[in-house]
Image 1 (cartoon, rainbow, N blue to C red):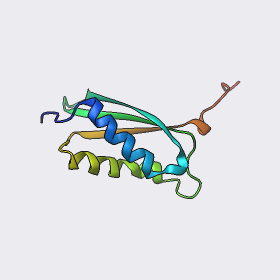
Image 2: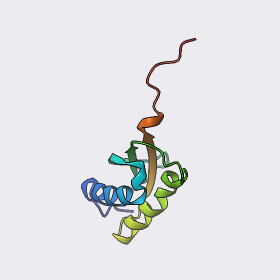
Image 3: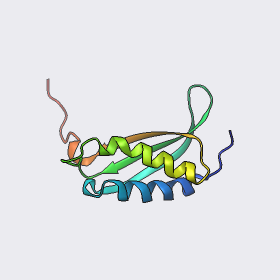
Image 4: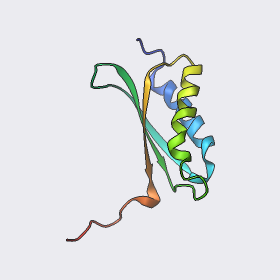
Length: 98
């Protein structure tokens, strides 16, 4: 399967979808890159950054993959998307001390 969109084009779709999907999470940006999976297939890796996880709809960040995939398919992009969410408010500020 050939890639039909560039990483820059994909990033524009990613930003549009994720920013509007869960506004209360305060989308901060995303890193998008084409990659190859363990089977040698072309995939898209997205690392999305948010300020916080929404209190009311905690699963909303996980479910964003469906909206993202639908938007990319609508533009002709059929590669599988791996989405990783990073939430700033959940980052550990100091290392564990044993």
